[in-house]
Image (cartoon, rainbow, N blue to C red; front, side):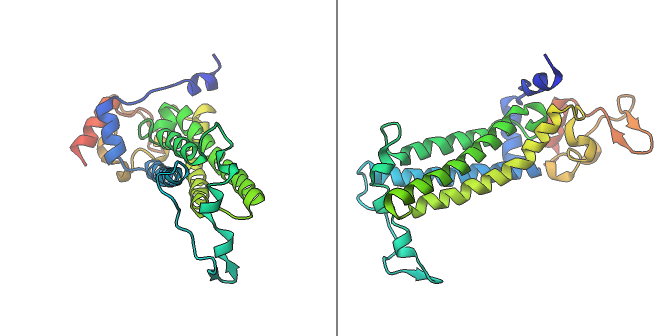
Length: 245
């Protein structure tokens, strides 16, 4: 199997106890962005829940801006009408079910992809960041397509769905840095990922820099650069995270 394909197929997910600690207590730029993607996806899924309640008759109306509302010259009362849009034929034409329920399901998948894997998953399971990035881009493109359909069919937009559109574009932007790291891994970057660039040695990731690597005979240094080649064993690194919160 070619090297890049072998790296793509790698699936090194931490054991449950360590995964729990990393996702809840870990500190890194990628983890922060992933948490934002989870939160934005759950916001969008909640919007889908609200719209779905209306579309299945559990609630009878969605709050809309007053028809005469004008902001900075824009007639928002005429532009946004979720009650009309989400009851139209447009909202029921896919899969024989209300699109609010489909919206809930698709953003649940995005949140799952954001939450899957450990802190350094771009190195240990590079397929996950790539899948998350692809899904967030798909969400953003789909939102634009649906907004165009909404307007063409109803000459109005669902204001709640447009909040999800903004959240989708934000998620896509947040997903890109980790996806780029995953691509570096697939292209044959250093086996230990960005730890050589200080990524795994900063205090922010929850591990004390002076304890991140084994000292003595097992520590290899590149002359003149202080580049660490051999990191701790995964289990030892986890123990240090637990010892030094």
